[in-house]
Length: 420
Image (cartoon, helix red, strand yellow):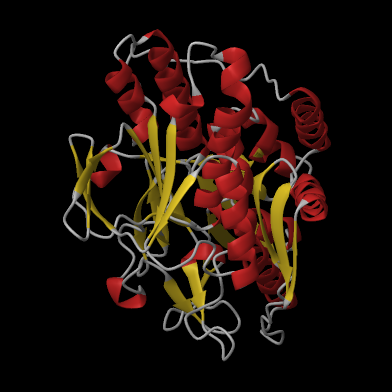
């Protein structure tokens, strides 16, 4: 029986192991977290709309009924292609075939130490941390007697106008418009500055221009400022420097401006693109490396329709994973991966969403209901689906949530191995 190692348990990894024939392969799944999560809803964690447990599903609950699949927790420290081994924080695992589905991380475009200064929503941990910082600013602002300092404390800048940036900006706008008056009577909406900056000439640049226009209108209705054509060049001492040279003070900067492939220590650089993605052929085989495959956001499969690679979305990851599993199960590569675009969507708050399927564009209430339905059925686990539905229903009726809890982590005893 061949040993098959899978790095990453995101959309690509979890769908691949769900379809692979375990009578032919002994599968070992490596991930730094012991759960699969649902990234499209990370912004709701950051804005206190959902609890992290609502959109996370333990790997062991998914695989315990299947033979020959094991989960191994750890950060990947070294990939040795020649020796066919993967070394993690805790062990070295050998393989016959390797599937890399490690996903992506933030791309800071060469800005030094920016990762230490800004907040993100790329992982569950980042989204939870960002939530705590947002709540911290609101609580401190509520007791601040200095009007100028209060406005500084309550300044939130979202950098990046893609779906993640639009969604977190919209969620903050809803808090400003609907939550402040009831739960923070000490604050005025004029005290809170929520601004989204995008370097190009429109937000949601990968979607139809009509989607961009609708989303822009929704954000403005939520009292979110949107500034287009502005590129950030640096962030030091809470001062954001823009490409035209001017600087502005922003207390909380949420970064959603770009992604790159997750670093793969030891993986030969000649098989990587500059943005960290791995070029693959139409069968998701890494070009030039027999027995090594890449799936999902970290893979770059170029086609005539997508000359720069398939979009880094859930559907290409899911479809590619199922196609690769099918080929490996059959023992030969007969089925090429043909991506079928099922559409794109983004939400900007209650009753505010945009949806695109081909050239068909829809916005407003119906699109928002469609967004809710698609995301609800895509979450793993019936318990998670029920919890999310209950939270959404309660928030829809009351705009109230019990999740605005400021939970500061305990520092000691130190747990350095968590970051290994």
